[in-house]
Every structure is written in structure tokens, then in C-alpha cells.
Image 1: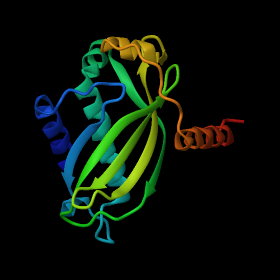
Image 2: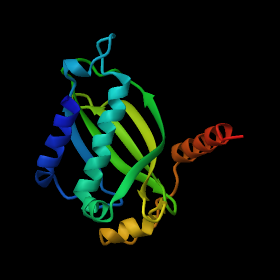
Image 3: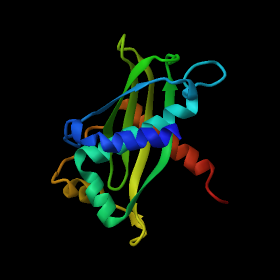
Image 4: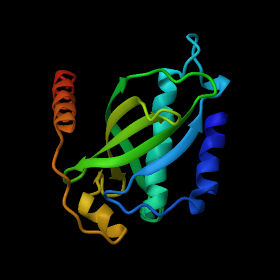
Amino acid sequence: MNLWLRLLWLIATAWRRPKLALPFGVSRLGFRVWPHDLDTSLHLNNGRYWTLMDLGRTDLMLGSGLWRAVMRQRWTPVVSAGQIRFRRELRPFQTFDLETRLAHWDETRFVIEHRMVVRETGTVAAIALVQAGLYDRRRRSYVPMRTLLAAIGIAAEAPPMSDAVEAFLAAERALRDTTAPA
């Protein structure tokens, strides 16, 4: 239930956060590690990282205004790949910020970078890359990135691919190719 409450809080308070200027704006959400977020080692459960990152992606859509087109067109967000690197644990009651930004995109998919940063020290506790897209069920295809950006009044080229994004996408292709149906 707490995740639904966090989602409702995110939606209800979206108007208070600054508007995000995509494609290069950064969403910043503050969190605290609560007892229901813990695993048996008494730190933030590894699955909870991914769930909180869903909220970061939601905030990108809310803050940029893209949510209007998503709702109007009934596009469906689809995550196709993800990779995370845990660097430091997040302990009970510790505060941290989730930073979410677009790292790269191609014709129909984008890569989002998430960073969980310990508020007191500025230490990066975890960093993740997620490949996603918005799927148009009526057309049975992914929505072109130029269409997504046009929906919020932007025409922009993708930033150069970092070494980390390039390695992530290469690993995703390799994994996809090994799991393809025979």
C-alpha cells in the first residue's frame, strides 16, 4: 500500500515541483527509507530501488507535461531492459534523493538514468539505466521519439551516447539475442 501512497503523493504534489525542461531536465524526488522498505539485512530492499525508480520516470512525464499526450493517446509505458549498480546501502530512516534524466534515445526507445544519492553526503548509493518506450496499442508500434518530443513542444537531437549507455545497450542486445525463440 505504501507504494500507492507514494504515487498519490507524487501526483498530488506535482504542481509544486519545478517544470522539467526535457530532454535535458532532471527530476529530483526526496525519499526516506522506512521500515517497510527494508529486507532481512535491514537496508533498502533491492526490489524497492526499481519500484522507486518507477516514480522517477512518472515524475519525468508529469513535470514535462508529457503525461497529457500519454493519457490522451492512451500510450502505454513499457520498460524493456534495466541494469543497476549498487554502490552503498541505504539504511533505515536515511534520506536520499532520486535523480532521473533522459540519457539517450533512438527512433522509438529511450534510455533513462536513475541515481539514488544520499542526502547527507552526496554519495551515489545506486545508479541504474533503463531502456523504455511508449507503446501505441492502436498502431501496434512504439511511438517515435520525435512525436513524443513534439507533444511537449520540443525538437531536439539525442545527446551523444556515453560509454555506459553504449555498454548497457550492447549487453541488452546480447541478452535479447540469447533468449530469442528458436
